[in-house]
Image 1: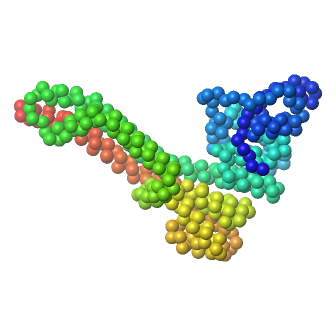
Image 2: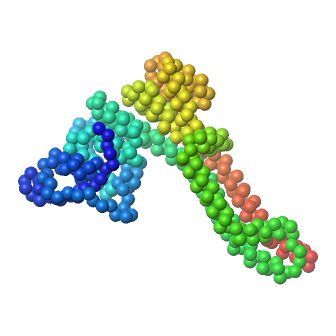
Image 3: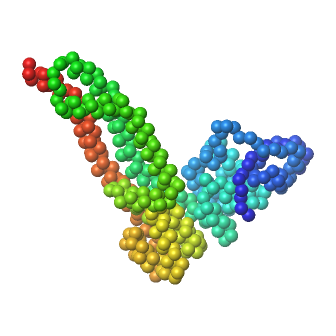
Length: 404
């Protein structure tokens, strides 16, 4: 069964005690909505698709990644304590967040109507990706849903910590440079023109440094809109190019990995996600080829994704994973060595988890190192730029003072 697009239907009807009830139900069609209500022993007298407000946020957009992680961990804990799935979902629905509560109640309603949890979750691809749903389905088939959800929660928690570290590495220099750009722009547009009017009244020749800064100020005042539009246009074109063209995405992602500092952090993060996902999927019982397919997407870098697909192709032709990783030449020696140990000891899951932990720690260390290196560099850069502008403005006054 493949889940289609979920719609919300408003209904009125009678329950098993012939008491009039009303509410909403989510389903793929009006027929499925009636079936679900019938399974809840509700006789429908009126039902229609509910229109969505113009600016209403959908349930999928309201739910956050951390909410999904909390759901995974909480449901796993409830199942391990012996509660049935329906009751575990009842507990999850006690959330203080209204949007989470609505989602959990809707989830419980669909599971109570007889639909597998994995199939129910597939209707929300923005929240629960294919890997998540496949792992849940594997847990349902094996009868170890609690173990699988616990594994998924651990995977998500570690992945979120890794993303937070990478985001920190990207955000700090960008935010500082953005603030610096605003400060410099204000100086060029607002402060320097007031000095220029003063200089015009002096009637003396200005230093070349001062003239250069004034010329830059005039250019920014006249062309700032064109500059901003050009930068935004370039960013939009680049973003669309990366999104629409695999070749452009491959080129830029490969270039990103070669950048100093940021490239190393991005590379380690991608390798860590690949190792963690491969350990989780293979340990969950997925065949190696399917586990590699899922792990490729988790890398998050088009360049490395292509290399992982090439590894998958070699494995499908009978090559050992270790040999395929070594032949690729794009993965660190430690990962190759741990893969070899894992294959020989029959513990690939454990070895790839160790690799992931190692690279996650390396990402954290690299972020701290980069921050400590960039801080004095950025401060020095700002001091030179802003100080240079101010020196250029006061230089004519100093010259006049020395003449007098």
